[in-house]
Image (cartoon, rainbow, N blue to C red; front, side, top):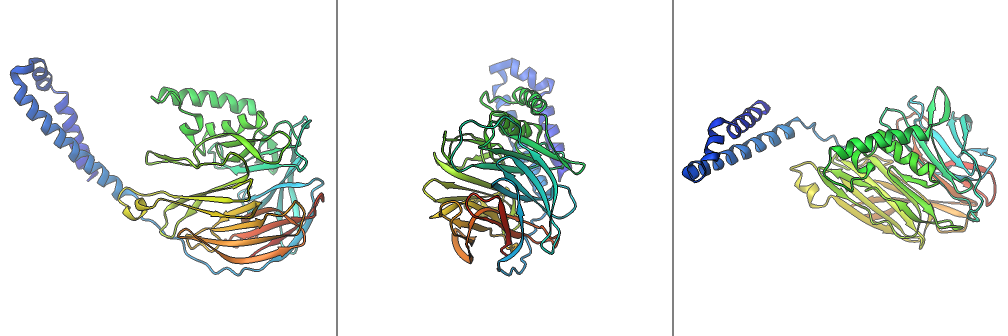
Length: 420
């Protein structure tokens, strides 16, 4: 089928560029009838070629593979405690060293930690790196931090973008040879200028943004993170950086890149509120049919969590095209939340906290998000505040664990709990 399409395309191009065609065009009105017939024939050939190419493209697409559900037992269990020497501001997890097990990534007001859970309530600090000086002269009463883990430059290895309200600027770190190392942001900026120049030369859009040109997994995505770090902005998602309202603990300004898309030429932008506490983006999910699924959530200053999900629809997937985007809200939630498909049924679980003051008794609710409905699966109360939530396979059993970090107000020691 692909060969037939190529043949038709070749015939179209040959007919359009033939000496007879050019001679008839010069003849003008004398051969207008034959020219019109030839144009109709060429259009028919072109439509045929496009149909054949689309059919060939569809035939070459691999079949969708739905996720296989697993049984999940929801129960809270304390796994360990650790003193980080400074208040914990952000928690994430990722297989940063490629050994098949996720490491826990901690951001405090001063440092980034890579910590491995080795079972039997044992935590081992694999590496530690400090945020660059100088310290900030003005900051909120309650420190704020943000951290994004991604393969920003597309080299198959993860990088960590981090910023704390206690420092003037942030940094992008790479885990290489067992150690965290701060990347040269000036070098990343030079890469950005080269990539941006190349993108502009290939585009007729004068307002094309670098993050639009390359997106996640590119030299430009790394440069966007580097530029935000140099400017002291907080990494929120890949291509999205925010600024705190001076002296406050919420964000009001940001560099915006579409969280969804572009997919098949379509870009969907998420309406981020004017004032918000936190954002999470997850683009490694599948829906129940096996389609790629991206989910973003943002907690506004009124305690509302707004969720958006976007499925990547194939050309002739009418069911998907009829409702590619889903949105829901949850009221009275805290700053910390997580998005993951824990039971692998193609419907995300949303772990949220309560809207309590920092350090006050808190709780974790696990909600199932299915067909626009949010139903509670599990709740666990804690005597301290929940300052971090993440989902990662920290024990290497090929299943995600939800990990909660609990601390009392002002304490540098945290307790780590698994929720399943």
